[in-house]
Length: 401
Image (cartoon, rainbow, N blue to C red; front, side):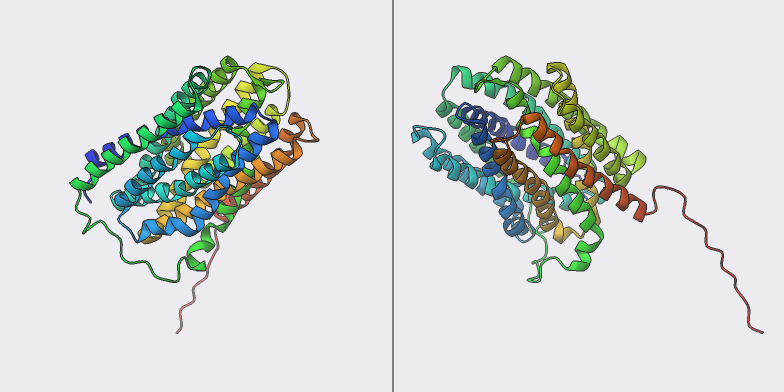
């Protein structure tokens, strides 16, 4: 199998460019909504992540039967155009804003599935964790840069300027992908035409417990999308310095977690790593629920993001390398559905509970789904016989005379 090193580097470059604008846009939207009300930001997070569920289930399989890079180019251009109506919205907390955010979110799982499916087609399964780690490194590098600069941009620039910036990054990303596509002959890269039956239960059965664990973990850990903004807000006024400091430190630990995935994955294996990190995330949520100052808030949330990244990359690598290549897009979609489904439900519940519960109490409630994920992961590890040595079964053989 060819390495396609240059093509992969260009693919990562395109993703880096688009993600820089993406994170600036997201933090800009969340800060703007938070200045309206605490419940508005919960609805905003739900609107960002909930459409990903639909896209993950019904649109991600397109990556298994299409020209993957052409699909990614089309999505980049569609997202750039979709940003334009937001330039003419007077109030950011409007129905049109939520509709366009939902449209942008709907396209995300198709893009990610196409990207992962393309990497799977040009990468040996045992090396896939390296490629997913590289994508994760980009995610967290742009998280640090995009969210930090996003909060400062919102203090000095209008939301319209941030939208234009994001549109430009999508156009540049599409241009790089066009160059990549021109370098590769897709006659040998396109997968065989997918069957109408979709994913068989026999394909899904070995992984269903893992999917459930992913959902419950994100149902609890999804509070991290709101946590920095709420901890940095007093009387509906966001302290830009506090927010920037927290998201930068969080992002650094997320990046450290991404860098640690490959050696940890190779040393102890995916299932043990999944169990261990789920336990750390549960402990981190407990610490996050304690309102003992800024240092504890930063330390606990950073630990959760770092270990959460190890969990996400190792589980996705385990799942993706366990299925046939022509099902990569579908299984990537299911993984994203479980991930963002948990996050979206967390956002909806936060929006409801914030009206009558203290924020620390809401974070405490998030402990329970995370704890469920830990026990599911522990059960899956035990079921696989990885917690201890297998019992030796003594067999007697008798020869017939």
